[in-house]
Image 1 (cartoon, helix red, strand yellow):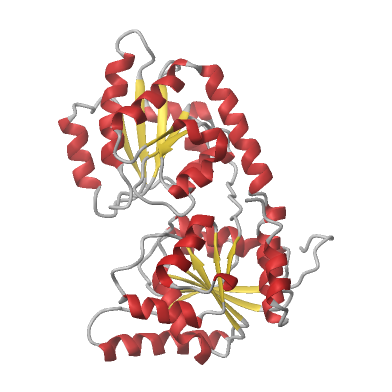
Image 2 (cartoon, one colour; image 1 turned 45 degrees about the horizontal axis):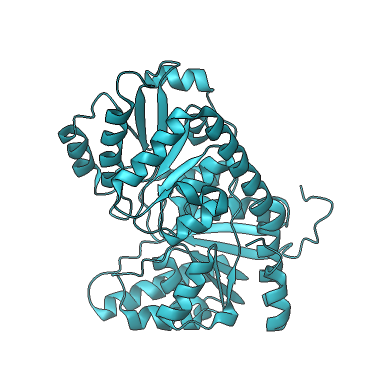
Length: 402
């Protein structure tokens, strides 16, 4: 049902989200958070096209919400001719879906759709930037060409907008910063059930990091920090337990080996890919997020949404995410001592945890509620479809708190 106060500016429009695959990461979660209100509140017809068909939870979530999903394999390897044929396959698959708007998410879909969208019959293609890492899969020239061919670029972070303009020569008038709504479903299991499952006692000090195990995340620095935390709290303090939640993505074996080498087997749990994230977050006292580079740190904003304090790495995307309240609890990249010191401060001060957690929840409510995220996104896309001027389009997105 559409809400009574919406203009339904995209009512009846056919919108195709393009994902790299079915695996659920932060970008896919954010895109799904956008897709649902476009269907239920705006009245748009939404489908998802994935460029890989390996099974994953993103497809399960979409189909459970009634969003159609299809796949087309797009290997980006081999000769120039082979890559050109991959682009044409995507263009043909999109054309069959008859889109008014294409919303590409992450680098592979962004580049492929930037090159192919004019062949699809779509009136608009949107490049959604979810990182500031660049890409090894494409040449710099091809990345720039696809970016320049895309009429509208949206990102969650100011520093990502600056990166696109300064590093890649994008036209700043086409780039808009819109914070994504962080939606979390009700927990499946409560705090007591989760803590029993994890073998935690009432006095244990549980800290969770939400991050898949790949090279962009810095689990190693967190483990070195955790060794310091365990030693610092000692026999007289609360028993510290670190919960690492995320799917294997290349670095999990080395991280587990380091935990063994640091003699942390009694103080670290590897949970795998957790599907009840709200339940897990409700069972811990603190969130940690150690990363080498982030767009807007969903591993920080999800715990913040639920009122947890966050200790994290001081990189631009995380600093922008935690704001002034969280800035004192950031550590320089790779500095396990400062990271450990911040964790210990929270371990010893429950009142501080409560105060910072409440401030985090209030920040998320004010900055990233649905009223100031997907509505602004829809308004901006509708303005592009209606041929509004650049000034009108800029005004459409400037209502989002920075």
